[in-house]
Amino acid sequence: MTADAPWGYRWRSSQLWIIATATISLFSETFLFGFIVPILPYMLETRLGLDPSRTQNFTTTLLTVYGVISLVAAPFIAHFADKTPNRKGPLLLSLAACASGTVLVACSSTVWVLMAGQALQALASSSVWIVAFATLVDSVSEENKGTVVGSTISMVGTGMFAGPMVSGTLLQLLGYWPTWSAALLLLAVDFLARLLMIERPAVSHEDERTALLAEDAGDPDANATSDPADTSKDPPRRGFYSIMLTNAHILASLLNTLALSLILSAFDTTLPLHVRDVFGWGSLPVGLLFLGLQAPNILLGAAIGWLRDRVGLRWPTTLGWALLAPLLWLLAVPGEQFVWGRLEPGTGGEAVYVAAIVGVGFAMALTRGAGTFQMMAVVHDLEAKDPNIFGPYGGNSRLSGLTELPFNIGMIAGPLLSGVFSEVLGYYYANSVLGEFYRLF
Image (cartoon, rainbow, N blue to C red; front, side, top):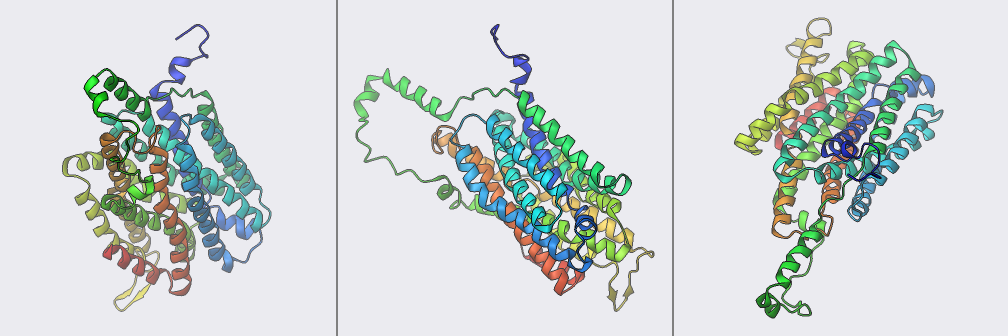
């Protein structure tokens, strides 16, 4: 380190700080996505004055808009992110958009302003996820990549339950504006971490390729047998998405992520309203239910990662999907009338619902991250065979964008399917239909 190096250069540019910054960014986005879920009924009915009968429709619309924006934006963001070796600038720009969208949502006085804020948040969230995930993958060596990324995914999973839990608890105990202060505080921490980060330029694939060519230049036999002008024997380059979307392992990984996203977004749309109607529960119990949904992934993430290392991805993932169908059915039983009776609230219905939520959380823990790990392994194998296959800076941003694709499709389809089925068929038959779909999956 030279005398004119920036203050704190050693730790600000360290691998640990860069990984921590990327992890905070990923956590903040998952936190903010779930943060609004328990608040939406209050915002729509109390602040905006909508009739409660329209709440389900508007909740479905808002979450669908979020998914559509993210889906459309992700490929463009990923394309440009892979054209630059510097991740800090895009991260800071994404944070500015995220903060603006959050303030717009919190201050919204009409449904249209609320939707505009959601759209801006969706755009920023897609950008943050792609750039932060690429930063994370770029910053760790191949031999440690699985451990670091696996630990990060487990930590990021806390954002999915922490968002609804924190907002639901604060809304009930402290009120509307103190609730939003928690989100703004997290964004301030995120901004500070990104501002302090000094990104070290990584050795690119192009550098590796140049070094190999330089070595060949010292070998007269290599020069004699290689004619730079003769490219007739070189196979034509295929694009990133052409390579990925014709790979069977990638397609299976995309389907796994799609199905998981459908479940998560379906809960965001229907759970708060269902437990209010059946059990009379407010925002605090809703937040605790989201905690029960995500806690198994947090507590068992390391153990499931160890299991995957020992037996592979297939069997744990298969077990998770096999458990989901009966658990989704069980989730819809409390409050329904059957030939053998009715499981009433106050006579065990609440306990059954909570147990089913925790069971679904355990099943999702077995499936979560499996698609991402499989896709990372495929990209690593391809780049090992041809370091420049995805360009001089690799394809990590586009890989992150590709993992976003099925997730965002699920965020669109999940609210639509669960919202429409709940409105037309009722909560019980909506869960039964989705459970049958996952059984076939």
